[in-house]
Image (cartoon, rainbow, N blue to C red; front, top):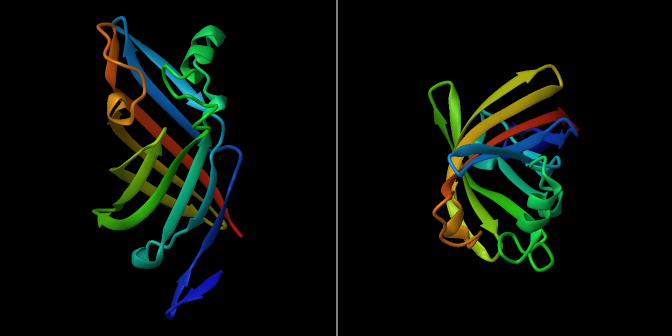
Length: 167
């Protein structure tokens, strides 16, 4: 634990059970996928939101939709371009309370495009462990992922479950 201006801040270690999943429409059907557990630095206290910060990155080459040929195509320059852009990153800019939950504002960078996204999330703490759960949507084309398509949707629904333990 670190001390910040008299308000205790908690540093959390991300556990391997954390996951990032996504869903997108393709030819009228939902395609589900996931990435390997994120690498993240988490300092968060629901009583000290102004001093909280989360930075995270995903290894784009870990994308998994259950079909290896599709995954290979998603890694290509047509979509994520993993050779040039191997990571997706999120860096918090601020947090706000929203009822019993929170909204985190993050600079999301995919490929070479950064945009602010709002991520509503819950934070449940039990003993020395906690879970962040958030869902949000982005337009893949806003980040240069793929081009216009009649069959592939633009809207991507993302779900993040970040399991953490006090350091």
